[in-house]
Length: 512
Image 1 (tube, rainbow, N blue to C red):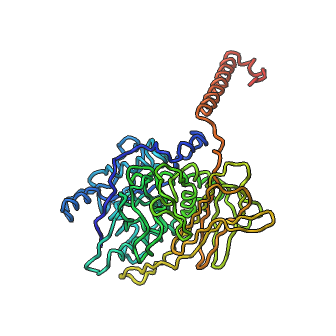
Image 2: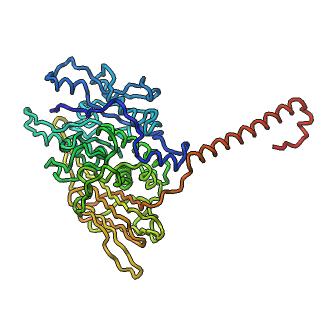
Image 3: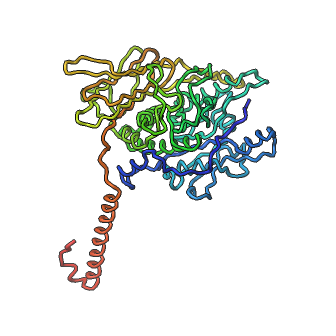
């Protein structure tokens, strides 16, 4: 039933100094207020690199092939991390994996994006599919997942058919993809998956085709070109969702996972924490925060109402600072009389035939470079248990069809459609409006069929938010330390005086 699995090649470790918006976030918040992923549990799914090498050498099925998928916590940057070897009981590792170590260091190592992440659940991809948590072709739904974000820096480009069961490769892939979408929606798991390396490659079966996952390519364009191709999973959908500067898709995926960990920690401190951490919201704020002004982006962007994302670059390049600004804004509700701020998000449920409107005001006199809006909802999957022996029936529910519009409202209340995203097959809609005119707008979400919760995120990009320079931050920090040292010195001196003159100290007023 299983196909050969291939991990994406990459150097074991690469720097995170690329322009991801992380330094902008640190300058804006200061070193002590920047989130680090603290309290967020990570799952790391890895292919067995040794098995891949054996297949390439014509030794497929060799029982002596070692099992390598667990990060090495003795390596610099990972000391002190807790590794839960979830797959170890059925596939005991014989050595650590350099690839897994590199991914862990990029995500949460010292110098990584989310160094505050301390607990990592390690899975072997073969075990993850079955008999492990996903429970492919099992009579039960997937197991509950304790982690909040899961990284898949491995792919299965194209699954072969199975002669014993007569299933085609696409049928096998559909089983895994549907169970993954079910798991994401049920457990509130953010799943970040890589596409393949190479400009001429197509989207891999696993898990680049998953509706509810965040599929990641590289900013240079040296990664898979969409759209989706599995007919059972509706061919022609937009993937990847986002890109990231990196040498390989493995590294790009890990960097986006690190960004998700930062956002999840941020969500925990939000007034609407339970909703802010939903995978639909995290995906929406990532897409709305993505940028399009990178030097690598030479090709024109799509201008098609039915194609919300670019087939190679998704919504654009990851920008952690933009996404953090969106998530930390107040959650807005449709129908609010007060106009929403220029940056924000919402999470609601919509029924068929209904329309939700959000008031938006773009102020005059600002450097309004662009307005980005992302709408995300989940594909629902039904898993029916039909007996103690037969595999469960795994079928997707009809996908709710949501559309997104931006409508300008003039002083007389006259409405004019500015932009529209209306894909009949995707579960994401996206708008990028270049240099929006100042004034009043409605962001409108409509539902033609089905009913579903959805996440909406938007950002009007203009002048940089006011920040303190690094020099000023350090000056303030050292000034605070100096004041604390002076106070401590005076207190110790007073304590010594009291010790030498206990009677006078008892009746003398304390000057501190």
